[in-house]
View 1 (cartoon, rainbow, N blue to C red):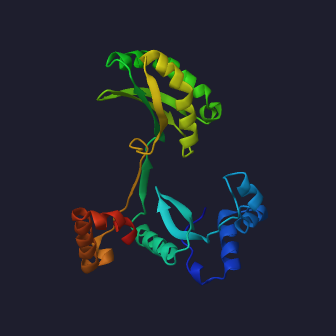
View 2: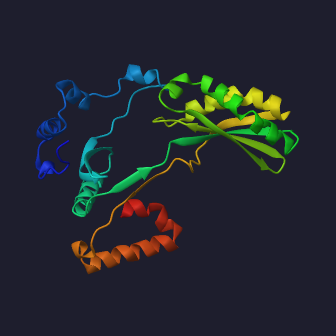
View 3: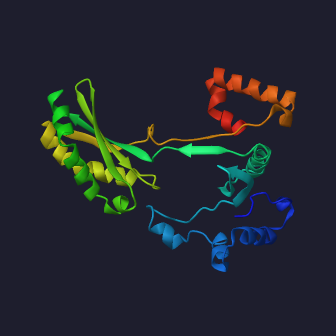
Amino acid sequence: MPSSRIPGFYRLGQEDRIKKIKENLKLSDEDVKLLGSGLKPKQADGMIENVIGVYSLPLGVALNFKINDKDYLIPMATEESSVVAAASNAAKIFRSAGGFKACSTKPLMFGQLQVTGCSLPEAASNVLEKKKNLLDLANQADPVLVEAGGGAQDVRARILGDLLVVHLIVNVADAMGANAVNSMCESVAPLIEDLSGGRVNFKILSNYAVERTASAEASIPIESLGDKVAADIVSGFRFAQADVYRAATHNKGI
């Protein structure tokens, strides 16, 4: 896109905003129609249980973002006023200093299989010796994910007291990954029982995604903010660093 900097965008009416977005992003008429459409009750009924309707949120767009030297318009669905404006304003400030730098790790999620009643550490060794067999079996459970460049990539074993916990490490590509990881865990559970001589109880995704992280940073000269504002930001950081109650909300507050 040419630029995410669109002066006066907030002063435009909704139709003119859509025209401006269409022009900047070179959207087709069909693309624009999607902005005014949403989930239909019949579609929703096929997604979850006991459907009685659908729930909508306003869709706005945050401007001014430059990330890794590329311009982006950021869609934001929220019912809270000022959030889109605040994000756009912050992006405008940091844009003048080069914008944001962002990076992410591979999208690796962990599936956990809890094995009870096995002989340790022998059971762990037996499982790890058949790592390739386990990975092949797991990937057979989700060929679509494998075709998309993801799939099970590693098997690890942890001993927690009298428990063996087997971790199945899965590259979930662009998916959240819960269904894929859980299905893979189910598929390898019988073989893990055979290898360990124990019984697999829990076989489920862990949301402690320590190997699936993203980070972003930006810097700006103090002169662009002024000494007082810069000092207040540092003071607020020290507050959050010292107090968990502030830290839990600090990113939003900033």
